[in-house]
Image (cartoon, rainbow, N blue to C red; front, side, top):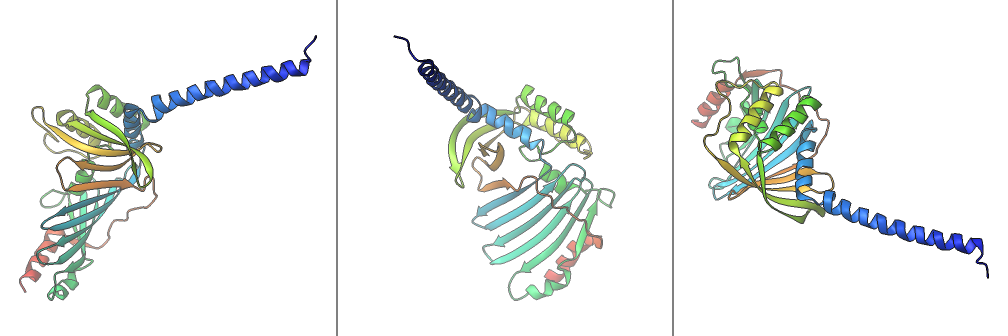
Amino acid sequence: MQIPKKSVIRNNLRLIISLLIIVLGILGYWFYEAYLINPNVVFYDMISNNLNTRSYVVTNYQQGSGGSLIERTLVSTGSTNRVMSLETTNIASSKATITTLSIGTPSTDYSTYKKIDIGASSAVYNQILGVWGVNSANGVNGQGGQLFKSIMLAPFIFSSPSMTQTNELVSYIKQNHVYLIKSSKIGKLNGRPVMNYEITINLNSYAKLMNLFLNKIGYRNQGKGIQYSGNSTANLEISVDILSRQLVALSYLGSNSIQVYGSYGINSPIKLPTKTIPLQQLKNLISSLSKQ
């Protein structure tokens, strides 16, 4: 008895489809285990993404017995290296609230008071609200650029001038073991899957990395630059979004603060103030008003 050709083709097709499903299942499982949730792969994908990020927002939350601080900073690097930070400080003992807005470039700092609420005498400060103080590297004390530097000196580097230099920085990080992953586990943050890490930073290697990076983006270190002695380390807890491979949260072990990262790649130009007075003059005005 001869089996119809259509039946043979149909049976072979079913077998082929079944084999394809099995193969795809194996490949999918391999991809999931070897790439999607591999802690080492997720971590260094995050490093590479950071070095291709021209802008982001980091919000720093600090809470203590003396009060609280919320600092939201927009960072823009690449063609223009600038940061803009809105900081609100609440002092528990006096129920005072002070809000400042600061803008930083590699050479200049600008700062203004947006709100000074310290009770009955708050009105005396209205005359200096919105007045911009400026401190330039070419100024009297030559301390301009400190805000920009402090933001850039984060545990992880964001942005670099070129792809060649990005690869150079990633290679340095790996070869010099800047970061050591101590533990990792999958969790959830705002409904999204994240990889939670506990890591240790080799501060000596980190200092050399940051000096290299700051020089590449146009910040000229004075003196010997950033230095750490001996085998100093820092311990962090971080969360990385598994799907986007982006850093979403960071905190130092034992601290009462947490940094939240987001708004990656937003296009929001930071404009520099055009009317300014020396920052020291603004500080002197505040000091004189506080005595009234």
